[in-house]
Image (cartoon, rainbow, N blue to C red; front, side, top):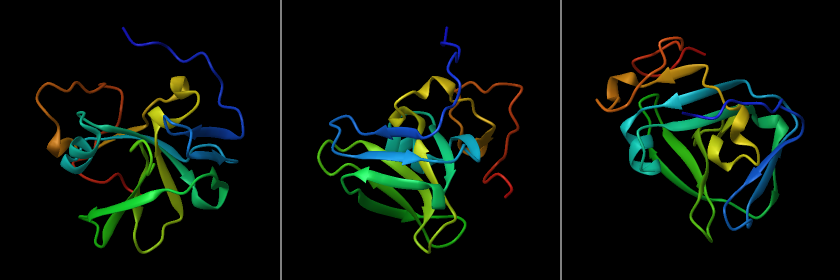
Length: 147
């Protein structure tokens, strides 16, 4: 049984990688929280989905270290930009476009307090694995969520 969130979301929201070489903060509340089930996210996380918290880019900043970026093709055009710690390899960010983006997505597991994560949508359920289970209460999209 999963743990229930008992923590309110307080600002700034902080997080980082396992070795603490990378630290970040957001001074804004999340715009959205998603579970992305696309094959890219499955490969990159080694799991059935990537749980991501989407923040406004203007409110997000690295407070320590620099990310190493890797790029994969995007169905929306261009490439997805994913940020990793160059020391421990933890994936921190993803989903942004290589052409610039008004938002930044961070993996929920990189948050200092991930207990409040609650997906608002499931994306790319067209790629869902048969052993993955979806909440019946969450809106679902075959590919990208609108907006």
